[in-house]
Length: 244
Length: 294
Image (tube, rainbow over all chains, first blue to last red; front, top):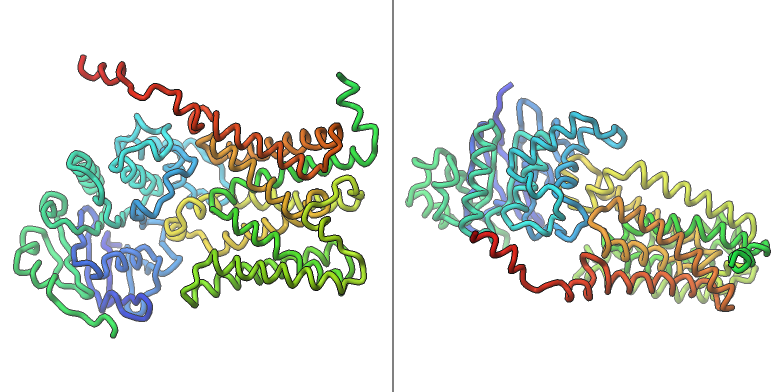
């Protein structure tokens, strides 16, 4: 049982046009991976495919030897954090309530919220540094805190893989730094974090690994050896089939 | 004073009306939270109109039995809801336009069809109900349907909540999102059918949306929203019934006006989200702000 996420020959289409082509890559837990590529490179598609939201045309995705398919997320090990605009922040729920939702898959429809669940929720709030805001309605948080609240929900789900779609959008410098610290903290606790990201400048500061894509895999590896001007250039100039 | 309150209960039709209002107010108010949070209020309005042709066809073929009305109404609502989605997905028409087009056609069809019903179907009765003409059978129907709705909402509370909050995250957590939304539409139709005799479909919409909208302005907890909505539904329905008895006005509109008044009051004076409350709050937090520098 390896703590690896394996994508083997993965192709995912969007409106019949393959958005991600024959993608093979292996990522290890305990790393923070930046998913980098131009607009329309298939970053969101790839994240949704790993989350099990899109069916695979070819290939397979495996985590710890179990296949991940649409609607089958083994042990709820994979947590998906949507783009911030996709969320209704007026929803009548507090930060604690949001984090408690992470326990629902484990509890099913019926099982009552036990001491253990409460402990996991408190731990999630502590790990993501949200204790002072636990009883606030979710709109009364800053952008960075809102993102951390979703990470805390994923923690409460006891996920091993965190999938984040452009979480840095709209965060100012301080919020970026705090959010990066949160991601690094999760990494140090053995989680695999995959983040789609479009700002080239802070890539080395955030990610230890990068995954450069443009419809297909361009390069994947440690940031210092892979995130080089030549490889970035090739990621942004490769032309791929995009329908006619 | 006591006489004043007790007077309506001397009449059997009023006792029945209170019984039926209690359960309808509770169920619609409770369900309303889910409708408002999923932004299905207009969908519910569309469904309310599209019940008519189903009811008319049921009346033509099987008469006005509750089971026939239930099935006819469900089928008509399903055709409009599913048809609307199909048109929206397969063309450039957006879903609210598609559903509005279908439901108004369905409604027109229904008005024509009720002319052919062997038993007299009263359009006013369909839209506004007749709470004072409630029979024992209608009370039992209302209670039975309400029990089904409340049971479903309690059992499915967690998956429903995950779906309402963020469907794609819910899906990754193993929730069958489309099934949950279908259940919700089904429950709306059931709630309307349970309110049909007493308040009609239009006023049922009021009971469905207004208490939940009021609670949405008052609370930051979805549990409070559904239980509070139920309480407002019950209170508003009973108060409206009293008013209608004493002021000799139609009961359905009286109930909706009471609920509407509560909604406007919450909009103006809700402690946290009321527009007047907010405008009276000090604009700057000088004291708190200064503390930071000390």
